[in-house]
Image (cartoon, rainbow, N blue to C red; front, side, top):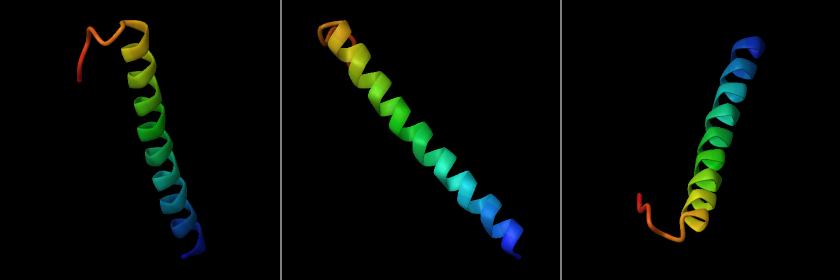
Length: 39
């Protein structure tokens, strides 16, 4: 039970960081393109 919960916890952490990185990349690309590309 402990191993499975650890696996799920790690999975959610990975998903969360993926979302954060996507947001940062999108903001950086928006700033670099001077707002030409809008998502």
